[in-house]
Length: 216
Image 1: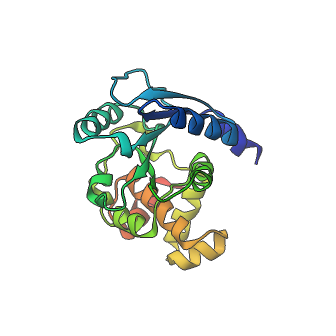
Image 2 (image 1 turned 135 degrees about the horizontal axis):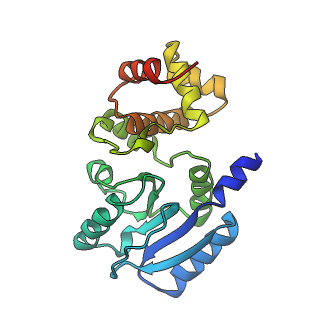
């Protein structure tokens, strides 16, 4: 538990939006709720010095296509330790467009309130993702599109290694969820993360990778 809390403090929040009193209030609320440092950055201004251990909250409500392409390009050049989250995301925003975001770890839709955002961010700081079940399923299915060109690609969390070892013995998502006392949806998001990190497309390839690279 101590390690969990300690690791969350290594992160800082970066809220990318249009500056306003509401945005400032949201940032203050998140900083206090999560005990993190953080800052607000104007979505229309360039930024190169993003800390590698940032949790980036990108406000889709204030983004046009030009801004989205600019920020996707900037974020794609950053460290894999970066965690990118979309907030105020329109319900109709296509999954294939979400897939284009580098380091994507979560999507908060317009309908979700601050309490849900805090809960989602708490999970992200523990190494989880925050996706709807449909989106998680889509990303897992299409995760072969992801490739990490970095030696960090195989740095799996303890929970990810646990899940890989369950896959090796043929456990289903339901069985993994029950044995680790987590929801089936959480298992799917972990699998998505895993497949992305080790650049595989399915469970069979993941097991093969685990057999070559992991000790039991």
